[in-house]
Image (cartoon, rainbow, N blue to C red; front, top):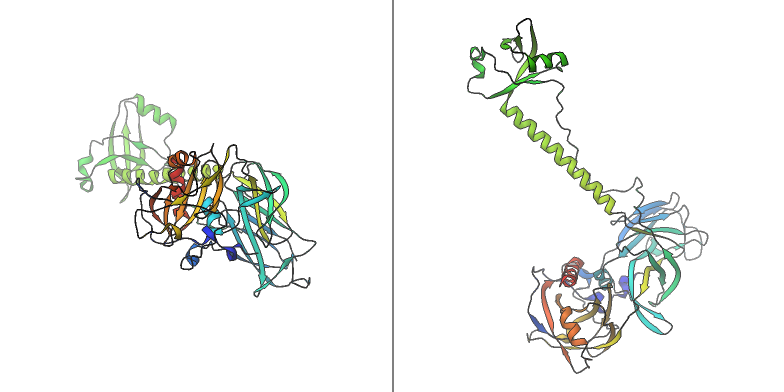
Length: 443
């Protein structure tokens, strides 16, 4: 099953030009139903979550790595055709995964679960769909085979149930699961942007003498140049270091070739010399720059390592024996379940609430319920809730959580109206809706 073919309601809604700031003034009102079926034909192509596509050779199997780091382990000879005959050659795999509320909304996948005759919204710990085909014809997972899925979940919760969805959009419970944080395995086929090269710091084996040769003026090439010191080309013996620090001396410079000199130190009882070259201020600047680059490189490496540690996400692992839609979920157990009714009007006569698509979003528990004006749904009065509304151009509206709480607690009826706020955003991608939802969680 490809859930993109089932796009409806909020799943078909969006896309225009992205504005920047959320408006702080309220402008309209709305009413709801999770079974809404609004056709946004002009926006479907832009709104669909495009599947990731892979090609697998049946004879070798593969480990497929998705953009998020999830993995699909496909064994050898895993597929059969519609007649149950083994498939040979290449098979095309289409994969989608859904994590955020906007992912769910764009997918069009039903997120309600019927538990003992009571429909409850899902709180998702990660959802995916997977399909296979060869030359446009469907293939199936062989009876004696299964695919191992390792989904890199964005939820920190450990305990979720695992569900599958049938062709009618109905969810079926499969098993209880407990997941512990871990990093995904990193097989060789993982690809990505190459890491920034590590720049080695300059490491000096020699020694820089802070010396002032008494005959420096005899060398015209040093005129008008700032010499910070004299660099040896070999380490300085500890005996000599001690002598230089503790005994008085004078030094002279003697040329040995075009670039090297001898720095001759004369003490009271003895003399020694070292081959040196001048260490100019521009050399120090270049060395500082190189060491700065090396430090920055090390910082980037450290940040990358820290990011990898943070990516010790919940890797939810399961075996599947058929293609379809699957979900790690728990049902939202509403502590104070109340019916919700709403109608919506807009101050702007050019905007029609009847041509909007709506979702009631629980910002606390991260679930959403679709609805339409004139219908009703339920909400948990103990949680932080909002309404997301999107018009046919992709413009995003919302109900301030504080307004939702004050209005909904008044036992609103279907004849009441609810105020909407223009977010100032239109949809170019799912991230635009995510930005609005993230903002609402902070106010």
